[in-house]
Image 1 (spheres, rainbow over the protein chains, first blue to last red):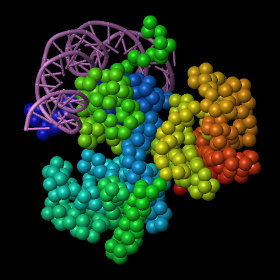
Image 2: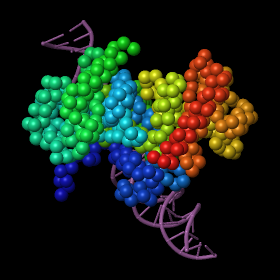
Image 3: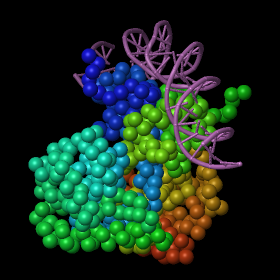
Image 4: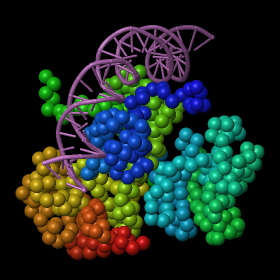
Length: 254
Length: 254
DNA sequence: ATCCGAATCCCAGTATCCGGAACATTGATT
DNA sequence: AATCAATGTTCCGGATACTGGGATTCGGAT
């Protein structure tokens, strides 16, 4: 009993945990009412009320017609993360140009807490995906990131997070992953062949600063119908490498 | 004593206030250390430590080499706000196209808590500005927003927030503001003539949904040298109105 | 006018947040 | 190599302020 296999769960400030539990609940559904949040979070009505009161007062949550919304203050906070490094902002332009030139989806992805985070994105109308987090091992860009780590770090990753099966093609065998990473290190780009979503292939390259610090991964992806072997292994790697090079140059000189 | 003229200050959950005070401090400076945060927030070392511990554990704050950073989790939260309405995402494309076509800065601005919030932006390398908040009365887009309100609401705004002087050109007289808003309602676009920043002029139009709900304001701005009267009062208003129309159409079909 | 659900408010009890101070660690300096 | 200063981490008693059950108010529907 109590051995849920769960992590610590209780360290630190539990009030803050409640606050963020509420924010997560708010994020998951548009314009939630207090009653709904009470239901969703298993917190008593008055607690929910008091917390929302505080968040609204601080301006982080917006109340309109009895419904509560995540406020724009978080955009400000998020932009801080998104522009933490100059390279991130430089990558924004690169992603856009890549998208325009190839007419496919393009993304810039960074690692945080052993997950792949979408930082910039081109393609389709919706912004969505930005800020989303996915497992590293199932994407071209994620594998490029893992390829930057040494074997011990990757082994830790496998131990801690594991290699979840996402599609039939996902690499779930540690040895296969190590081989794949070695391949990526050798040729300088990573490929994702329907490992993350069926029908989708992608190519990714690493992006470095002028001092060769690793920044993140630049990737293009699209439907298998358009992503032939030639395109994936020849044209795109070259194009991506050039763009990564441009970022480096931009960072070196204004 | 105690009559600081300060607002309430103490309702709700004060622990949450501390958490966000820390986050704000984190936002203002890159990679802060615990000691620095202690200094900056006037909270005891152990309190800062405990809060950061919690935030890190939750994944909202990142610790690297003893320095703390705002994490990407806030991007996720922020994107939720940024895509709260479909119209916001549709406006993203419009902003981009406007920027390309005019080769000037373009923005989409929305009101929250009686402030203008930058939601989308085109121009220059830096993302910065996105999520930033400015007073409504000093910008073309802000005035367009105020023009949507009725006189009573505007009067409340003036009472609550006031008409701060930002540049010599800022409208600080209530009557002048009411006149200006009437003018905007009449001709359907707003102009900012160095009211927000010297040397900068701008033009803005309102954006509506297919059911004529007000969404926000689309604007273009640039240096006085390039923003002649003709450009500002003829070409740009037309161009902007067309783009606002396109958004409406996008929302109605496709 | 009446009813019902939801939001808001209240208040006593105590969980838990706080913060001073001791201890550990890092790394810079001589 | 040894010392020292500064920062990070841990501990713990005490009281603040968070909690949550329940009462009250509000607002809309029948």
